[in-house]
Image (tube, rainbow, N blue to C red):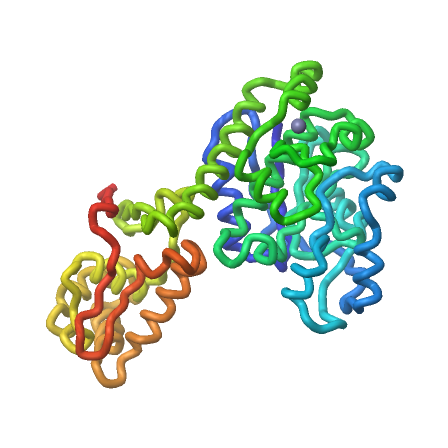
Length: 393
Ligand SMILES: [Zn+2]
C-alpha cells in the first residue's frame, strides 16, 4: 500500500522530513511517499482569529456528541483548559483554522492533481487547526487522513521532538485503516478507558504519552486484526515503527536521569552528524557550524577562542570540504573572518550550533554537544568521546 505524506506550508520542512525519515526506517509492504509538491497550499481557512467564546464552543464539542455523528478519533488538542491557558494567555489569538471538509478536500485535490491511485492513502500533515479541535481524522472513503502537527509541545513540553507524536499518529491511522471498513466500525472499537493501546481515545496529555510509551495493541484489537485478516507483514512494519518511537521516548526520559546523552555518529565524506539513540536524527549544521563543531570534537582538551588562529590549517582543511565558496582565497577569507579574536563572528556561530542541538536533542541534553567555555579559558565539547563514532564512507 502506498501512503502519500503531504504537508501544508505552515509545517516546517525539517519536521516533515524528520517524520518521513523516521517512517522510512522500516521496510515492508507499506511505502511512504514524499509529497510531490513541497508546499501543498490548497487548504481554505475558515477564520484567522479565535475568540475565547469560539474556543469554549469548540471545547464543548465533546466525544459523546461526536460519537453519534459517527466521528471517531483523536480528541481535541486543548482538552485540558489548564494546559491550554498555559500556552495562550490572551484571547483573541491568531490561529489558522479550517473545517474537516476543507482538509479532506485538500487531500482530494492532491489526488486529482497527481493522479494518485484510488487505493493509495493520502495523509495531510498540517499546522492548521480544525473546527472540531481534533488531532486527526479520516474521511468517509477511509483513504484521506489529516493530522494536526502543531502544538504538540503543550502536551510534551519542549523536550519532545514533534516527529514522534506525528509519526505515531501516522502509524496509528494506517493501522486503523487496515483494521476497519468504515468510520462507524472504528468508533465502535475505540477504547474510552485508556489502556495503553493504539485505539485509546485520548482526552488527556498523560493518556497520549501512555499510548506512545506502551506502543501496544491490546487483546481486543488483536482479535479484531485477526478477524479482519490484516496483512501480517504490514502489521509487523507498523509495530516496528511504534517500537522505534517507544524506545526513543524512553531513551529521552531516562537520559536526563541517567545523565547519558545519545551516541553521536559522523558519517561519510561530508561528515553528516547523527544522534544515534534519538532515532538517528540528523543535526544539520551549515559549513561554518560543522567546521567548528568537528574541530572542537577533535580537541577534547579544549581550545581558547584567542588561540583558534593557531589551528587555522586544521580548521581550513575542514571548511574546504563543506564550503560552497568557489576559490581558495574566498574560503580562506571566510575562515579568517570567523576566527578573528576581536571582531570575528565566532560567537554567532557558537550560538547557532547551540540552538540547532537544542532543536534536535532537546534542552536537557543539548549541552553535551555544544561548544562551551568562559572567556580566556578553553572552550570544549563535554561529550564523552567514547560515545562518538566516525564512519569514513
Ligand atoms: Zn485496543
